[in-house]
Image 1 (cartoon, rainbow, N blue to C red):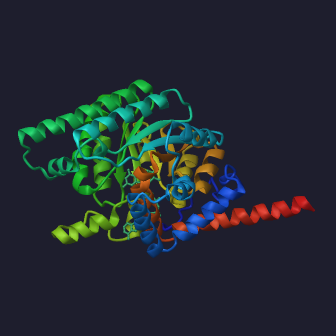
Image 2 (tube, rainbow, N blue to C red):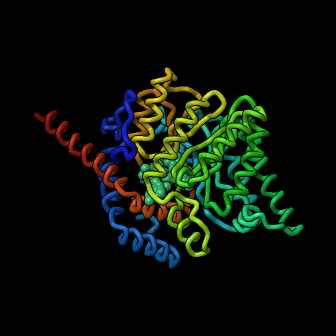
Image 3 (cartoon, rainbow, N blue to C red):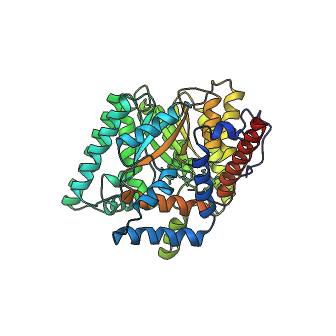
Length: 406
Ligand SMILES: Cc1cc2nc3c(=O)[nH]c(=O)nc-3n(C[C@H](O)[C@H](O)[C@H](O)COP(=O)(O)OP(=O)(O)OC[C@H]3O[C@@H](n4cnc5c(N)ncnc54)[C@H](O)[C@@H]3O)c2cc1C
């Protein structure tokens, strides 16, 4: 996508046009598969239809798992088990790209499943400790606690005794996870979710940062810059971390629940918490990058985006201030299966880069895959960009093939 904010006159230090580097890890066949998938996701109607049909077919026990696994699952997920995802991690590692294992089982909403997820997350953290290609891990708070409880705490409701205890159990699980991350020496990114549950999550993330981010950021909170209140919040976080003597860990994203946020606000009659234009979101995202650079000594950042302009903006500030490309306070991150032109070219230039890699049984990752496809159709221009890079690389390979046959 063309930069949506006016280019400033900073030195542009990196190009994302080198498709040979971007797709070096894909065979011709795999590239053809990517082309096919991104061509399909161009149609919102088809995406909706196929997502629903896949879920129905799996529910009915129809044998389509193999088809999903060898197509869309292969494009966006690391595998169903450890053996499978280790191969992907190793492949990305060869290009100096780290992997953030994303346990994407979106299962039960009860204490037993929250405990299971906590145990699974600690296993992943232990895996990260011994694998140099896994620089950190990530988690969703709603995987270790009930959505309704996060919502109640965010709204400021008075909790019953039972609910107070349940919220304490969430805090205990989170504490065990962050403690394990601290021991492993690898940070943990806490994902941001919908605004009506985020307040409680922010509070817990701040508690954990104050406890574990001594001298180095172990716990990272996530800021969604499609929310117009997040720049103020970022500013308050910087002040608080400075005052309390810990390093702030933040992941910047634009935000994944735009329509849901607007729909709920309209339905319930409160002002929408998200910006009314994409330009405003872009401006706030880029303002946050500038604020980070000004506070780089006391903030660590993961820049989670597929937006080329934002990545170039950060790289530009780094060059301007003589900050080394591999500065330990800066990671660029994209989702597996997307924006390889950004990830692989940044890694080749020596920046710290990682990819979120979801894994789990095919059935359990379906909601993630459907979101991926739907989000992609909703992002104006993103699909065009992915397809454009793939078409360019396929053409390049054909030309190189023809030349070498002569
Ligand atoms: C590594 C990584 C981690 C992530 N973690 C999270 C997370 O924890 N929580 C989360 O919510 N999301 C997360 N995301 C998803 C992210 O929020 C975006 O949905 C996605 O990355 C697209 O934004 P972009 O910056 O890549 O690209 P762009 O294509 O430049 O931006 C698209 C985004 O702009 C915003 N936008 C689009 N249209 C409008 C409009 N009309 N008005 C206002 N804003 C608009 C939306 O946020 C949309 O997703 C993550 C993404 C990555 C790459």
